[in-house]
Length: 43
Image (cartoon, rainbow, N blue to C red; front, side, top):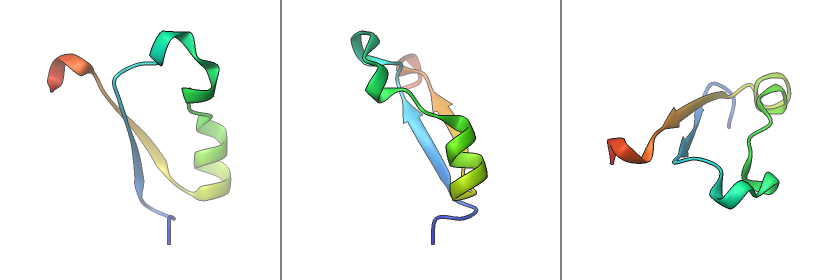
């Protein structure tokens, strides 16, 4: 169901918390999803 979908990350890493960082290789290779980023200034 997730293959070909996009994961949108809004904002940046909150206070440097590593758990909120995206592992792009995992999303692309395993899930077949692409990553997109939206900066907080675009809200």
